[in-house]
Length: 193
Image 1: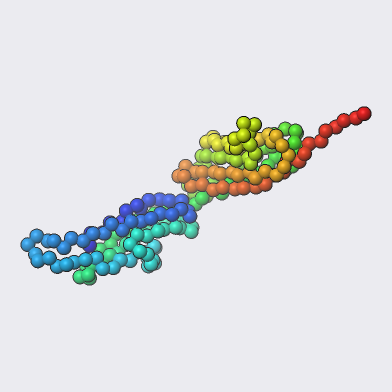
Image 2 (image 1 turned 90 degrees about the vertical axis):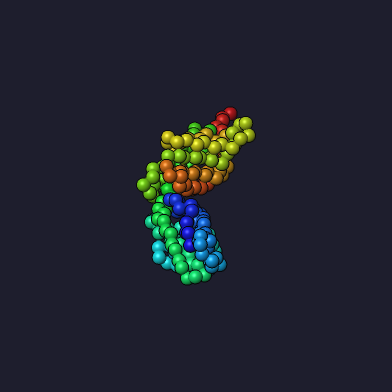
């Protein structure tokens, strides 16, 4: 068999990678009677552990690290061939933020959001995206994305609970999302008579 694994590449942890089995066999050797040779069996291995899979392998790593992928294919004449590749799986960054001040009242200025995310691979975080859970005066969702700093502020126009969604992405493209609910308390109006 003429074996070839396609699609070997490094990926992020928990991503899905489909490895294609493009094995062929040629039973038409010039000057010989055709032997009706065909592919009869295959076996995938991940780090030398046999994996039951149809012709193509769907690989979803559950931990970062190096993975050795191997495919072994047999013909009906009991000839075999194998191909392998190594895949590096990168850890995901861990998105997280803190809110300053801890509690906010409507009308007392902007609420600060401090990025306390962690990098978990050789790749630096280079993209931050905030969804503040409120809407802008024009009716659009209040989303702010940047590639230079994770810290930001937002001024809420109404009191209430807001789901803030924060996504970070590293230079390789691995990403993580963190959500938290913040409360903006109604402001007080002072008056005297």
